[in-house]
Length: 251
Length: 251
DNA sequence: GATTGTCTTGACTAAATAGTCAAACCATAA
DNA sequence: TTATGGTTTGACTATTTAGTCAAGACAATC
Image 1 (spheres, protein in one colour):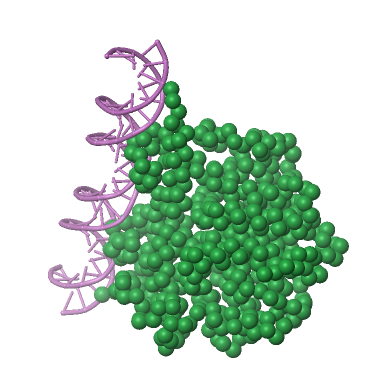
Image 2 (tube, rainbow over the protein chains, first blue to last red):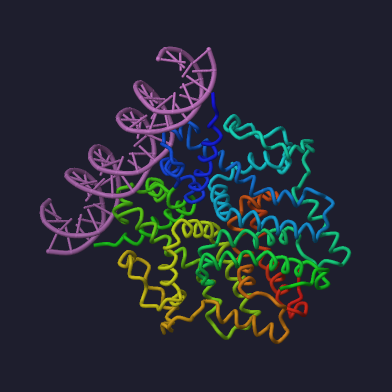
């Protein structure tokens, strides 16, 4: 009758997320997740039939979290190039500061099973793949079914045939900027990759960079908080011909 | 009598490297490594007593490979700031193009066991840690013994007490550049991290970026080959006040 | 208080996997 | 040919781990 369901389910998911992010799919132990959720392993299996299903639920949510800022780039066509960049860096650095373990986890699992990406990304961002979007992949459908309700904000159906490059609008703006002379010559794709790299890598390379720069946990976090501003400075300097189009207030 | 030793040992290491890079420590199976080396699991254990020991041998070599370009930055104090940057990006992109799986592997294992970094890095680059360098850690000495001879190029002993920040020389040069007005205002540490990020991340985020930019394997590789030049362009533009100090030949 | 349906768990099973061992193998040198 | 010593392996053990199950706890309704 009652639904302590959600309470426990949420606790389990949180615990599972911690453990999966810490150890990856292969390294995670169901017992460890159960311990961290303060329940028995049997209970864990009561809520999530299998490790695979539990993992899928966590990963699906995480990749969504990771991709949303990227999606933000192409949504909202009204944004100017500069505010698009500002928005992206801002929201991405924010997301990552809240979830420092996210990037490495995502990259790890994506690398060991790249196939997974296609179905999950298509699900989150319809029309990413060039192939006609015929409603998800259908390969391992019927797997999830657990937390499948809150995708209401991304209901941009309209399976436009096969030319919706995810970053087309962004790239177009850069090309326009170059044509008008406001922007330096750059390869737009390389520029975008650089932007993503500068935001994401510091979270992936944390242990290494901490040693190289001799920072403890607190110092490294502060360093990352300051980083948003610095990245923006770099990106605008790379892109724009005249120094500082606006916002000259540093420090 | 005979020493097919080396032959087999090398084959095993290569196989182990492939498998470990593909699946990480936790995901790797001794059987899989044995199969890939075309020997039995028992033989595998004959050469390397345990999975741990095998892993250590592989990881030690890999982290060395990964760190050498970084070390290159501080070595050779004669390099100018600009050529230091050029050298770094060039050699790093080269190393990574030859070993695309390296960065994710390193970051993965470093994250799940950050402690390991300190001993291995100190071993490769004496004086990284602030602590007095008293000749390695001594913790798990006598483990390797395999590839311990070609460290002749790093004989910068002189355990200078406790102030050898790894990147001090580099940072100093940037500060000098800023003082003289040749360089923009930047946070040297943030700049260095950006440089590393732009080189390394594309290899870690490969599967994701491939989808975002809709590139197949060949296209992505070409993209990465072209990237060295583009990164240099960006870095110099970030750093130097007057556009293009030299080398104006693009494309 | 008995009934019902949901949760919870200790104890179990089955499969996977690291590591061992004794016997066989094979090249070389006496 | 035989002895020797490194190499190889099939078959085994011990341990870990995902997943199951039947019995019980618990809360709400009758």
